Amino acid sequence: MDVLSDVVAVTRAGRPRSAHVRWHAPWGQEFAPVPGSAGFQMILQGSCWLLPENAEPVRLGAGDVVFLPHGSGHTLADSPETLLSAPVCGPDDHQMYDAYASDSVDRSGDGGPVTVVLCGAYQLDPSRAHPLLLTLPDLIHLRADAHGHAELRSAVGLLASELENPRLGADAVVPALLDTLLLYILRVWFAEQPAGGATTGWAAALNDAQVTAALQAIHRDPAAPWTVAKLAVEAGLSRASFARRFASLIGQPPLGYLTWWRMTTAARLLRTSDAPLRSIAAQVGYASEFAFAHAFKRAYATPPGAYRRNNAPRPSPRK
Image (cartoon, rainbow, N blue to C red; front, side):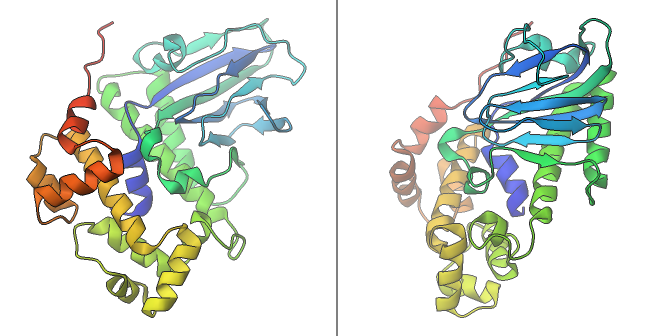
């Protein structure tokens, strides 16, 4: 798998949520801050205002996408002057976020102009958030008139159709489309960063062919016996030049990131599979179960067996 795919697969926890919401002006909806989550708002019809907690209002039009990678609180409204009366929407608002299992939510005002929004949230694992996500700004605004959004618009259209008209298989299709949507949002944002605009961080790293080659090698085969010298060969650089460049862009040495990624991958396997510990150890590059258990306990402050028991998925309550 590549870096962006792994970010979504490993750091997302639980089911993503989404809703297809129709408002009639005047209206306003406050969304509570939810640490350890990421949210999005996509304007399908009409226009509205995004009112961030600590920034200037942003006017949104049909086709605009807003991504909040750190779960920041915000408000959507038909006007910055609209008085808010609706309850604050939180992650447990089933009327809003379980809409794909029923009709679209329709929160009407007084019959004014209509705004249709596709909104959603991803629960992330705050204990192992990927540094790529941590370096993103609080608010990403992808304008409808920007170039390169064809795939993103297609994914939005498919998701909107599933939420507006739920059919058999929606419980499988919607989460898959939400993951696809998140990948497209990240892909578009990173592609829009100007070459040479960022000198450090993941935006710069993913625009650096040599460092990206080494990252892809780590993610493609985390169990391989990587050394700095071998990763430098993947990058096409000398060992010293590669080590300096990688640490400067990523914020940690190559082998430090390799160990972090191995432990993060192991934690996902412990949560989502019943594979024996010796198998998981081999998948993340450890020749013995003992060595793996020692490294895992150092990273998570708990043995892998206890971590698996404490993080086993719980069945969703029946409605």
